[in-house]
Image 1 (cartoon, rainbow, N blue to C red):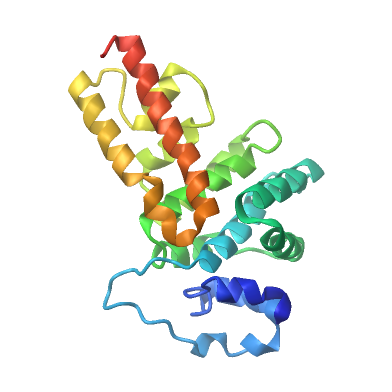
Image 2 (cartoon, one colour):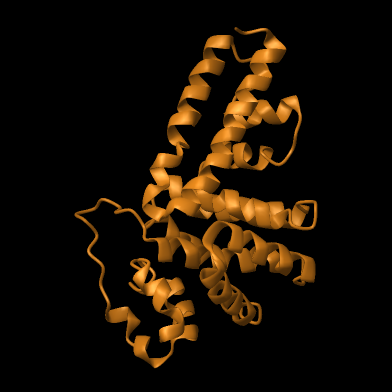
Length: 244
């Protein structure tokens, strides 16, 4: 129990409410959560409350394991990358717990679709998009995102309720060319300057780091990297078009 106390204290709300994530968590915490299905979290009269940091971390750990397993085996380089990635974004203690969970999950069949459905209805949109952003970073640990990984990430995005244009935008952040800049902003090369500006304002508003403040300062800082890429894409297109 003590080993995973930080996860609980950090806001494991919808995970403890049951479902596939609750069942997976039960593998680690033991008999104290044998009756996890009886724990109810208020829904807020139909509104989705901000997910807890623990919910976000556990969801990331489960889905990251799925992504690493996508091509048939988990490489040491991937594990090393994920360890450093988690340490950089979430701290040493959370990383130790997450790596222990990944070790256990690597031998289990993870019900990805069901997990994503639970996330879909209990996590706000900004957090889900940030989750996808992290997963792409993990998928590229070995230098390239394979087609198998892309297909899994597209399934994850779709099942979490992330629209396809947002998926393509996040994906394009890992490819540095002018076409990727347009995809990051969700517009085509034929978009007018006014359409481009409108798309940029929309992306900037939806992906502002302040929307993730409830998940902790480290996650907010990671979101700033994505926000910076949106700004860089916009500046790249403006420069190419000669927009002042």
